Length: 282
Image (tube, rainbow, N blue to C red; front, side):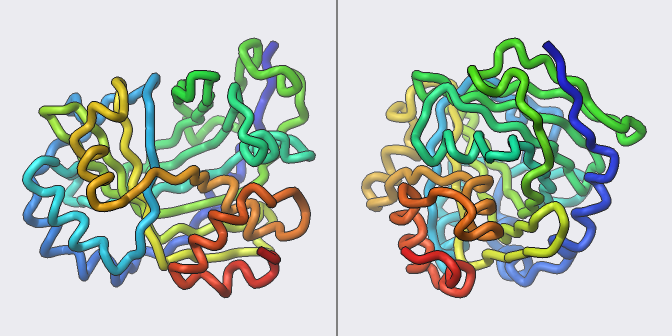
């Protein structure tokens, strides 16, 4: 079975969601200059279509020190003179927000469907991400040309209940990313900050500059990663964090279940995100 996703107007909606200026990047320029670099066409940037991952949430105040500790082991992606890149996402879900609900309930065999544009290179893709029952992330990518008005997706392998679902655009998001690579351990580490979200009608918008998300991605066991082991010694523990779920929660308060996300909301409040969650009782 195939279904079409209407995407003609997606690219224009992100224009003002995250502007070009970033005081954070000015503050990071010195520490980023200390990294060796790799290129977009290097093995470091090959798509990890089958992987394990772990996410860490940390306050922005520690980001320079965090990166400085990584520079001896990791190289940093550089492309077109940039070392920091802007990602623009549009997520798809059912009218009942089935994908959100599955994540909230901790259901494995769940699905995420998104459009992603890389602003600096002006390229765009559709990503289908499955979290299987072994907690591995399986990713399928479809390139999307700007002349196309929609994209056809094969839903035969979708989880039950989503094969014939009525999909719609449920959330827009944007953020900045640093992409790091450890050639010895083949660990990929991404650092995302300046997270922004808005509803597709652009009526509700929020910016979360108080924290960053570090995500370790590797094909083998996470315990085999030197970064994973060193993070434990610094009491950095992996956190179940979904940009999509947090964006839905903030921009649509009280429209869905969120009890299982209350510990995460309390954690974000510790970073100073109180204003963003004022409408959600935790």
